Structure formats: C-alpha cells, structure tokens
Length: 290
Image 1 (tube, helix red, strand yellow):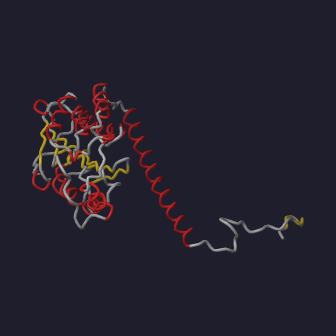
Image 2: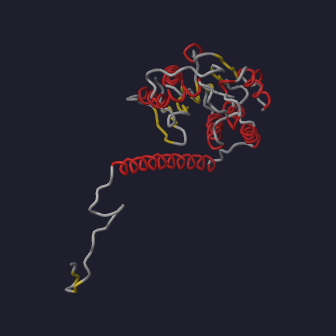
Image 3: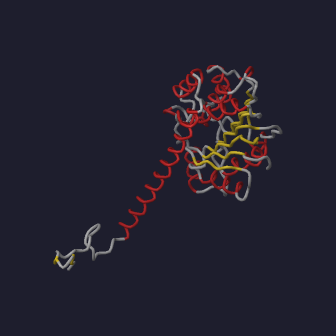
C-alpha cells in the first residue's frame, strides 16, 4: 500500500512491458529489439549529421555565401541528367566549399578522386574560377576490387557489381558498365558550361596508385573511392598538400567500412585537423604539416 499524509491509497501494481511482468522475453524478441535499436541509433546519427549540414549552410548564407544562379542551374542540370548519386544538399556543400575558397583567396587546386559520371565534379567546376586548376581522377570504368582491409559489406557490394546487378542513377546503366565513360564525362563537362580545355580541368584516367602524383597545393579534395586501398592512397598523397583552411570531404565514410577504416587509421593521432560531422565527413586543415 502507498500512504500519503496518513491517507490510505490504492495499491500500485508493477508496470508491465511487452506482456506479463513475470515472463522473460524470448531470444527472438530480444534480437528484434536489438536490431530495432541499432536501426534507430543509425537514423538518429544520420539526423544529427543532416542537422549539422543544415546549420553549416545556414551560417554560410548568413555570411553572404550562396550559390549564384548559374551554379544552381548547373546543379539542376546534373540532377536532371542523373550525373551524380549526390542529392542537391550534398552537391551544394561541394560548390559552397569551392566558393568559400574563392572568397577567402585560398590557393590550391580542386581535386575529385572517384567521379563516376562526373556530376559532382561538374558542379565544383562551375563554382571555381576558370584559372584554378582542377584534377579529376578515376579509372573511368569498372571499380577496382576491394582487399582484405575492407569489410563484408564492401565485398558483398563488389560481388553484386561484378555479377552485373548494380543499378545506375535513376535507373540508368551503372557507370562501371558503360562503354566509354571517359568521353561521356568529358562531353558532360562541356555540355554544362565547363569544357575541360578552357576551364583548367584535367581528367586523369587510371588507378589512384598510378595517377595521383600531385606536388602542388590543394584547397579541396572530394574523395569518393569507396574502398580502403583507394581511400588510403588518396589520403597519403593528398592530405599533406591541403592548405590551411582547405578541406577533405569524404563521400563514403558513413557508407562503407573500408573507407571508414582508412580514414580512422590515417588521422589517428594526427594533429592539425578539425573534424566536422556533417552529412558527409569533413576534415579541415588548421595548421600546415603532414
């Protein structure tokens, strides 16, 4: 019984959750609950990152950093033609990073490693000055195989790709199955107002290990290499070149285990970088050094 000020009150019964209080949950029920909890936690983390992204773009807008109409037009065209897996918010993030570098007068090239059909690179090219160099690296064909450093999620995805089961953007042919992706990307740049010949853009075909040999400042590196080996190669060769105030944007950190492992290993104990948990992971160079 429960008493309050000498007044006899009703007897409280135990709260019963998921059936009778004296019954134990079956193992299957516990597994379902754990799975639901993990799913909810993932959704919560994603929502927090999306909120951080929205706050960052709002801060940029308040400071006067907004996409010009011509860049918005390019972005819309890229989306309409299914040239990028990225949604408009992510594409604006890349364009705003380029515009921010232009406004602040930061030196250095813009780099994209892993371009697929070229959409995100085209948007960044539209945002940069014609004189600023841009390097776009890709095999322009079938994605290279993962290694033992990648998790089962990556290997399952690669098996699906090589089996011919991958779907392209908006139902189009998957980029790795296209006959002449290099020419397609080159033509897409021109069609959207940034012909590579007159826009200081270089499309570099081949494995990252063979082609990324830059020895000049980099202000922005958008890394979309998916797997461990490609991501680590990019970090080892590009991170030391990022100028103070420049940044690396990791497209796949939240998506693929190999990319996540490579990033965590490379930046463990490495000073001089600020981590921004946004819709995509940003790593901002604060001080010079490797």
